[in-house]
Structure formats: C-alpha cells, structure tokens
Image (cartoon, rainbow, N blue to C red; front, top):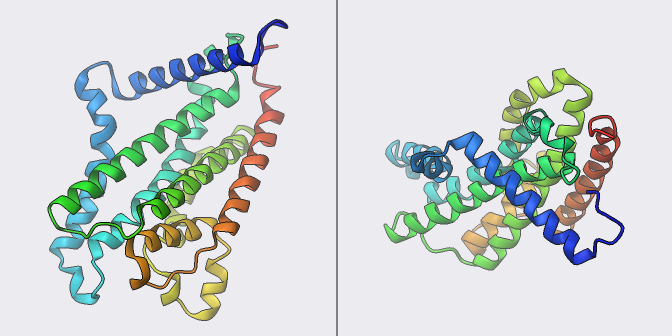
Length: 265
C-alpha cells in the first residue's frame, strides 16, 4: 500500500481495512450476485457438498466396516482438505479479476489474493461449524472431545491455505499453463491430504513419508481434537507451525517479486 508521508500507522490500518472490505464485498457480489439467494449460496454451496458426502457414507452403511463413526470421520477430514484446495484454486484468478483495481493507489496485488483466500477460508469455516453443530443436534455424531484443539488445528490449516495460495498464484503468474492444470493437480493431492485415512493405519514406511506433508498433520490434529484418545494420531504442531511460516514467507517473497511487473507504477 502507498500512503502519504503524514499518514499514521492507525490511519494506514484503517485504509487497509476499507480496501479489504471493499474487495471482499466486490468478490461476494461478483461470485454470488446481488440477490439474497445468491448471498445465501455463499453458505449453502459448501454445506450441500459436505451433506452429499455425509449422506453417501450414511446410506451405504459404511459403519459396518469400522466401529468409528464414519460420518464424523468424513466431517473431520474432507471439509478441511477442500478449504486449502479451493483457496489455492481461487487465488490463481485473483489478479486477472481485479486488474483494473490495481490502478487505485491503495490496492495491491497482495490485497486481491488475500481477499479471495479469506473468502474461501471464511466460507469453509462457517460451513464446518454449522454442519457439525447440526449433526451433533440430530445425534448423528457425538460432541467434540476438545473444541479448542480443533480450532487451533483449523486456524493453522487456514494459515497453510494462505501460504499455499500465495505460492500457487505466484507460480501461475509466471507459468500460465500451471494455472490451468493446478485444479487437476490439487484434486490428485486430496488422497494424500489425510482426509481419507489415519496415519496410524498406514505401513511404517508409508507413515514416514506421509508425515512430511503439512496438511496431514493438520487433519490428524483436527481429528485428535474431535475423537480424543479413542484414536491414535501422529500430528506435530511444531512441524505444522514451521511449515505454515515457511509457506507464508516464501509466498510473500514470490508475490512481492512478480508484483513489480503487474502493478502500475
């Protein structure tokens, strides 16, 4: 952001807040329309997707393969994986969709990426909270064992989504073909996100490989918070924090480098 020499830090924060708010509202209207139904779709879309998967597991009677509540198993893995996948996919088009706004002195490339990822994280978070609350109330799943631990896991994975979104956007900006194939690549990554398995159930060698992926630590941590000591998990909070910081730092550097050639001087 560029401000006058006499702009105070407090004023700068206020301006930044207004910029993000304006971009966020523009993104919501552009994506979901101006009508109330379009705005409601902001919450209904991820709810329907999650509901479809939950119903699939429910009516194929997947519980007969395990004593674990399979609805809870799906709900503690798939939505989190979709959060970082959707966030990185949406980050790719953030610049082209807001290119004309970059001529405004207070709007920067980073603002456009941040806004898109923020919207995806917010949508996923609201959907997760609402849907898990509904499932608990209708007695399809038990109440979480440790909500606070789950919130920490979700927050750390939101940071992962931000860092990944920055990096993917920067790469796609340099290599246009990458932006076109990332959607497929990110879908292929879902099986190794930890959403569909516990690390404990993998062979020892596969466990060692799996634990190099930050998103698996986030999923294991989230499930530990929900199931408690009834399951065995292998998350490392320290590893996930360091991974998040590394992704964010690398992403910020990459965005800063290519922004010079995108933002009007």
